[in-house]
Length: 93
Image 1: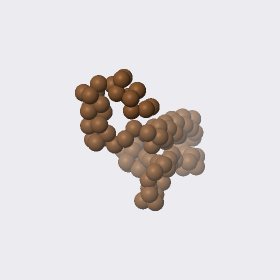
Image 2: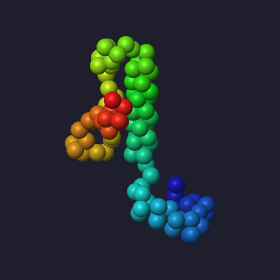
Image 3: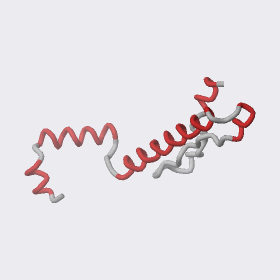
Image 4: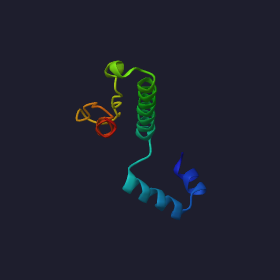
C-alpha cells in the first residue's frame, strides 16, 4: 500500500497503536501464519494420537507414534523438533 493511501485510510493515532503493537509483539507477517499452521498441525497430531490410544489395546499402545513438534519457520537450528507431549505424558501415565 502506498504511503499516501495509508495516510488516507489510517489516522495518526491508529498508526501509532500499530507501531506500538509491532514493538511489543513483533511484526505481523508470514511468520505468524506459518506458526499458526504449525500449531494446528500439532493439535491434529494430538487428536489423532488420542483417538488411536482410545481405540487400541493397552499392550499395543506403545506402537502408536507420539506427536512431534512441527518445525517452526524462521527458527534456527536450536529447534530440535522434540516431542510435543513430553509434559503431558508425565501427567497421564
